[in-house]
Image (cartoon, rainbow, N blue to C red):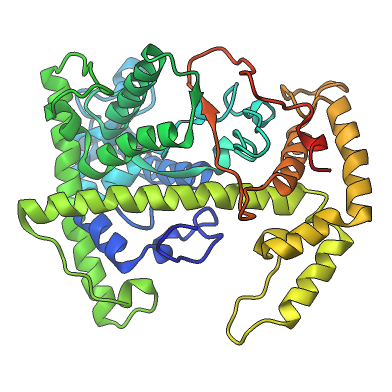
Length: 431
Ligand SMILES: [Zn+2]
């Protein structure tokens, strides 16, 4: 849980827009970021692709028309080289679509923190960095397509776009860590990188191009006129989107729209100073939501796959817990909703222990503790690896009963098992 006291279990299930605090929402709007446009990788990618396709279909259709109705593709459209129409990237498209639609259509789904911190191989959950009992939970429970994402405007290979600058900054951060000889990425390292991402997301790619190089982000590469022009175009869209969004927010308030945005009237930031404050606030809001989303993702894995969460003992504890609820309290539905004492009871239940022991042996035989994921009889499936990790996360907790902090590796390094990682024995230590 973040300090903002928001409902747990929300960021990844869609409709993130309703869960920002009023202050976060106002800051996002001031920065030209649609508060709704957050979610999992897949949710965001689908929304962007749809918006892109609508415009592309129109331009492809217009280009095929005859006579005066024919409208050729933009001069630099990729279709002129036999590729998919890229007219959507143009300044003309921005004019026609309006900033909101254009920004969405030109965005790619972007993680707040790089995948590579958490996994040995991209999109292979079975290579999640193993946890270390009592210290950290590694990358257990991480799934790249379920991780918290936002819209990063522009293609990641298009210099000057927000997404390009974010990706390059992440690479620079990786080099910085490598040069320091860091092999394990602690939660502080990961957060530091995520802050860099959130900063560019809040301020736009232009801020990186014009900003002073820092130790973590030394090499900005060649600042070409094209790169500057791309950054300016996206900045223009961002400024336009801020206005569009502000208008909508005000309309919503007048209509007495329900939801958290109406709880408290936020002071709307104005001027350069106001924008700067809003940008700083956005970074904090995104980082806070991202942290919550990591716990949400891991709790979901525990609740879906672990022996404990699927046990009879868990059902009993949920029923007992809900019987004694104070009025107005949210009833528990899952293992993760329960307080520490009840979870401990479930973990100590003899039937749960027995089932867990048996299952752990089966899963280890299948290499679900080490991966990689595969299709053969001796290779684990994603579900089996998640089940192993869920059991680990259910039984290896922080002193206060919460999830252990995550810890990763420095991206780009070959996957090794650093000293102190005891992945194969981990599940035996508390069973
Ligand atoms: Zn085109």
